[in-house]
Every structure is written in C-alpha cells, then in structure tokens.
Image (tube, rainbow over the protein chains, first blue to last red):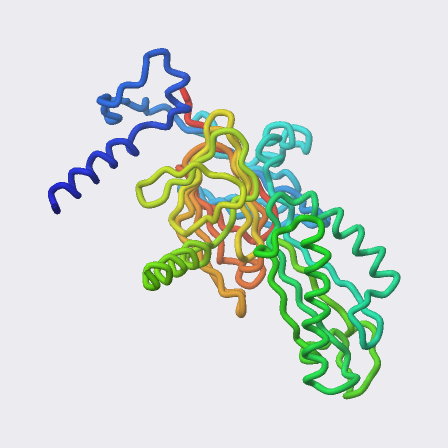
Length: 222
Length: 145
C-alpha cells in the first residue's frame, strides 16, 4: 500500500516536474516526458536587472534600497533606477515614458488599490443622507469595475440613544449597504458586515450628542 | 455521513481561510500557482498562500492583492516566489519576502510597510531590495531566454 502510494507520488512528481506547456510551445520538437530537465545547460551569461521607483497616485515617491553585492543604491526620486547590465551595476535616471512603456503589460495587470469609502445617514435611521445617496452611485459604479472585490462594511452611530439600540442600528446600516452591493451583483459571500454602535466615534463627543459625522458606514474594498 | 459533512465543511473553511494571504484579482493568458509541488492554473478569485510561486507564460500576466492591502502584478515570462508572508491586522506588524527569479514585477506596498519600514523585502538573482514604501517595478532578464 505504502509502496503504491509512493509510486503514485513519484509519477505525479514526474508529471509536475515537467517544464510548463507554454515553454514547450516555443520548441519545435514535440514534448517528451522522458527528457530530463537537468540536461538543459544555462550559459553563464550575465544577468540583466532593472529596479525603478515610481511616483504613487498621490504624487508622493517612496524609497527602495537596492543592495547588490557590495553596492547600495537608494532610489527615492521618481523613475530613479538601479540597473545591472553587461556585468555593470549603476544608478540611472529613467524617463516616465520609457518606464511606462517597458512595464506596460505588468502595470496594466496591477489590481485596483484597496480603498475605503464613507457614507452618512439621516439621524436615527438606516437612510443615507441625500449627499451620500449621490456618493453611493459613484461608489457602486467604481465597484462594478473591480473583478473580484472583497468588501468589509462597518456601521456606526452617534451617541444619541442607548448603547444597545445603537449597536443594532449600526448593524442595520451595514446590512442595508450590503443590500445595495449584492444588488449590483457582488456575491454576498464576498461581503462582511459589522456594527460598532457608538463604540468607535469618528468625532469624539459626550453622550447623547447629535453628530452627523458619527452616523456613518465605512466600506473597505480590497 | 454527518462526520463526512463536517469534515467537508471544515476543509472548505480551511481552504478559504487557513493560510490565505492574498487573492488573485486578475489573470490573463497562462498563469499558474505552484503550491507544494503542484502546478495549479490560476484564475481571478483564487486565494494565494505563503510559499506559493506565481508563474506566467509568454502571454501571461497576473495581479494579486494581499491582506495588508499591498498589491502586486507580474508580466509575461515571470516567476515570483512568495517566500514569507504574515500580517497582523490589529498591530499591522508583519513580514513579506518575495523573490523574482525572472520576468517583471510591479509592487505597491501596503499597511505593514507603513507600520515598519523593514517589513518587506524583494529579492532578485543579483540583489535584495528593502522597500520603504509605495511603488516600484523590477525586471529580471536572463540573457539568451
């Protein structure tokens, strides 16, 4: 039994150890399962590498520190690059155009950035304010563009009323939003909801204070 | 029967949550995840785990979003190993070690780098990168390939 299982594992291993079929497509010869991968000799030619720092969406540029052998390149300006070519390691300044072009397919595949939206409610209800109703339309339109969104909806209240009642209301607010999200086709399994009542005030207030900015939901999308 | 159902439910839950550190958001062309010696075709929605290796074919590209809100993508002909990943959503502490063996990579760092600037490291065959924040791209070309 054990021998059989081991045999099956070896066979499976052999199948999965094959090079990817997509690599095979380039080679003229038909794929041969017996061909050991170890006979492919990689020439000891020098490697080429490029690391480039990009400005983020808000215009700020971060820092990447590249350690290559004994060299240390601190990249902290837009499109500053650390490059290894022809055995030479150097820091160079690239242009936005050449970087965007050279990495076009890769940058295109970058998922939409995780983000958080805030919406506000009419006092004591799970009805959005008129302004937030307009905002919701924009948010739903944006969410439709995301291929497989994971969403967390957290409801909140102001400090008017009892703690328990506010826990309930905040949960209702979150659930109401979940309803809008499932209506546009986002699977309910991808949406988590929670109510925090008056336990996490955006604007700290005393008890029983009517504060519109605390009557909110946070919709976090990943 | 009831036990079998329970076990199934557990497996499902485990499959969805245990060890999942990110999710494939987009996959175009040939894209695979190598996990524990298996090569799984990768599609949008598929979870990504620590120790997975993301592999794309000559026509492939893929985007992944991680639990700390970092996002990354790989272009055609890439091999990217997610060597170590952990993130504590309460403290925002964690670590993220990835290794680009070949191909192209774009990264937007997330919450753990904001919390501790040494949390994320990306390796290439020749170098190691410390990520102090935000966005960068990497290309590794093996001559002759």
